[in-house]
Length: 179
Image (tube, rainbow, N blue to C red; front, side):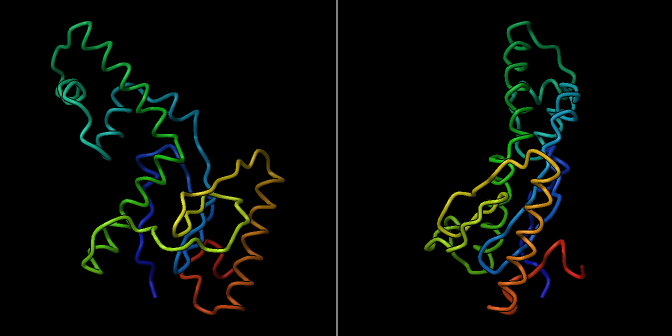
């Protein structure tokens, strides 16, 4: 069965999805935050990226339409741009946007309202990547070098094999399928 969820697009965020596994009740992501790219974005690029996700502000909309801003307005906009730049490389904001789109899809399908992750917590506790479990905020752990990244991938593969053997069909989609 094809996946029914959509993870926030890394086109808006300066976050790359290095690996993933989508299960019936949660998902695992291995993410790379590309700070260099974000820090090199112009003010206009940050506004463009942010406005692809949200409306922005009146000032950012005026700026995008090339309207003249006063010095005070420009200072206010610069503060917002700095805030948005940080958010566009934030795992928390990335997960927020991803989980919101998942909740909207699921709520539409089930004709209900509310948050998606509201049942008792899943017992998995390895915490090696960004991984929202039903009933909890996502968990994350920084992978600071190649060795940590390899260990995370190995752990995810072991977990996927164990879950597949114990509960066939639980993994819906994985970046390691066919490997």
